[in-house]
Image (cartoon, rainbow, N blue to C red; front, side):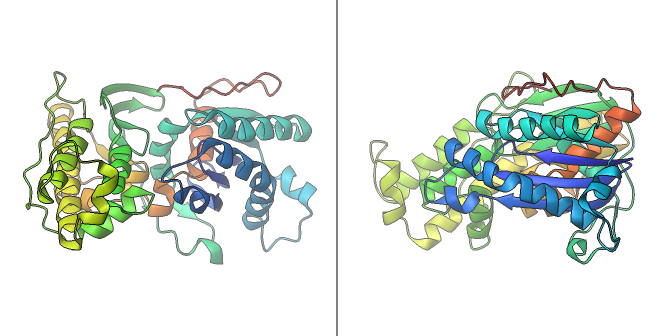
Length: 364
C-alpha cells in the first residue's frame, strides 16, 4: 500500500510516499525557516504564504522521486497511490489549512481514501520506517533495520510538545506525563534568544554548548507532583538570572541587552549547563518510566530527538532507545504517511474529504 503523506503544521512544506508503513520511496521538504530567522521565531502569516507557494511543487517532486526510473506520466503515478494522508493538527491554523485543503481536493479529484493524522502521534511512526528506495536522493537517510516492538515507551520532544507516552499497541496508548509550561524545544529557543544565538535555538544552543562546561552552573530541575510531568519555564528563568549575575547586573537588566555584554565563554557555559540540565530532566523521567513499565522498546521522537546530548545520555538506558535519522526527527511527511498505513491496517475510519476540518489544538 503506497500512501502520499502531506505535512504543513508549521514552517515546513513536506510530501512523501511510503509503502506499507515501512519503506520510504520519497521524502521532500521545503522549509521556510530562513524567512523566519530574522524575526527569531515562526511568523504564521509568512509560513502560510510559503506553504501556498510550495505545496504543489513539493507533492509533484515527491511523486516523481517515488516512481523515478519508471517512464510514467503524472496520471500513471497517481494510479499507483493507494491513499492520501495529511496532518490535521496540532499546529498553526493557516499552515494546517493549506495542507488539509490540498489533501481534500486531491482525494476528491483522484478518488483516493483520505486519512487525517495527529502530528505529535506521527512522530513515533517515523521509527517504523526501516527501508528505503535505492534512490540517489535518499542515500543520505539512514534507517533502523528493525521496527519498535510493543509495548513502546515513547518520549516525544519538539518545539511545541514534550510528552512521555506508553503505547500498548497501535493507537492504544496512555500519556504518562507532559510539560506543564514550555516544551523543551521552546525552552531551547528562548535560551538561544537570551544568549543572542540564531533561530532555531536547538541547533545553535547545541553548537555553542560544545565549547562550554556543562557543569559550570548548577541549574534547577523542576519537581512535579506527577513524577513523569515536565517543566522548563523555571530552568529558562534560572539561565536568565545566571546570565544577569555573570555580567554584574540584577533582575531588572533587560534580557535583550544580555547578548551584547556576555562574552563567548560565558555564552558557551550557559548553553552547555542549560542543555545538560534540560536533557537530564527528560532522561530522568524516561529512565524511571522504563524501570516501572519495562517496555520492549523505547522510542525518542520529534525534533529534539536530533540532539546529540539527548542521544548520549539516553543511550545508557536499557533497552537502548530507538531513534530515526535526523531528517525524519524534524517535521516531515514520511511519518504522516507511515501513521496512515497503520490506521488503514487497524481499520481506523477514513476522513471525509468534503468535510475534514483542521484542529490546531489537537491532543493525543
